Image (cartoon, rainbow, N blue to C red; front, side, top):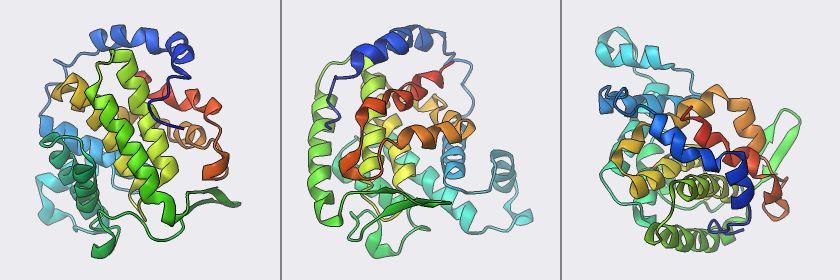
Length: 253
C-alpha cells in the first residue's frame, strides 16, 4: 500500500470528503486566536494522553503557571519534549531528516539516546489484554519501507492537491506510518505530528490549530479500533481504512 493510492478517494468523498471545504470554511480559525503556544501545548497533552500519560490539560497548564507547586516528573517532561517537537515542526519543512529530528526531540524520556531519531533494530508488536494485537514489519525491512514512504510523501508535497485530497492523504500517511512502526517507541506521537505537519505544509500554518489530537483522545477507542486493519504488516486490509480516514475531518465539526 502506497500513501499516494487513490483507491479509496471516491468512497471517502461520498462519506465526508465532499464536506471538507465547507467544514474548513465553518471552522472558526479566528475564534482560535488563543495563544498559539497554548494550542501547541494542548496538542501535545492530548497526544500524550492517548499513549497513557495521565497529566490532563488543566493540570499541565497549572504546572506551567507555577511549577514550584507541582513535582516535575517523567510525564511532565514527556509532554514538554513533545511540545518542543511540535515547535521544531512548526519552524521546519517536512522532510525525512526533520521527521527523524522531531522524533529525537519527543523521545527523550521514552528511549535511550542511541535509539532516538533512529529506526528500530528490534521486532515490535502491539499487545492487548488477550495477547498480541499487531506485529509490525521486521526491523531489517523498516528502512526500505520508510524510503518508499518518504518517496510518496515528497511526491504529495510537490503535487497540487485539493483540500479533500490533502486530508485524505494526511490520514493515510498517519495510518501507514503507524503500521510500519519505524521506531522502538514514540510512533503514535510522531504519526499524529506528521499528519498535521503535512496539512500545514499544504494549507498554511494556521492549520496547526485544528484539534485533531483532542478529537482522537476523545474518541480513543474508535481511534485504536480503526487503526487495526490486520494482525501483522503482511495481512493489513486497507479496504477497512475508511473508518480511520474519516476521523480527521470530523475534528473540524
